[in-house]
Length: 204
Image (cartoon, rainbow, N blue to C red; front, side, top):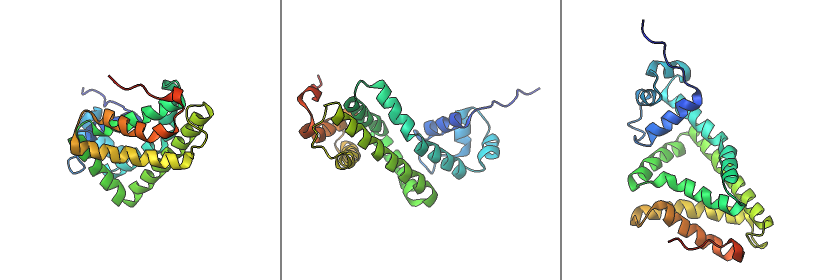
């Protein structure tokens, strides 16, 4: 008798898809590749999701809906709101472990931007992330880490823009790691608003 097919949860499939996406571009990604990564058959994924596009839509919806969960994890793992904000920057830098990895992630972003259904989830995730950043900044003010003159809405938008731009510029210069490059740029943005006790010591 052949062994019974392995059962996996949707979240396990999504994690497998993300692992496959980390090494394959949109044109290379297939249901077969995702299935192999998840340890199931491509037919099992067709039965569950219908097609690769439907699977990607489900993954996008899960990712956009998990923004609050991700930020809650950052807050729990870090001692202060400002530390959580810095950890968010480090998290984003994971998209650029190499210029090639960033290029691959940008290829998926291009798909998300041009597919109306995927774009809906992308925008929802972006809005949720900005709201979480505003909340962290407000908490950092309350905790005495940032000065009270901070405009949380404006600073959250600036942090978004700086992290995205910093990641791109790192890929041009490729000096050190993307993580450290982006940390430096984030600190430059935060510096005018930091209380002295919240200043990060120089690395090294």
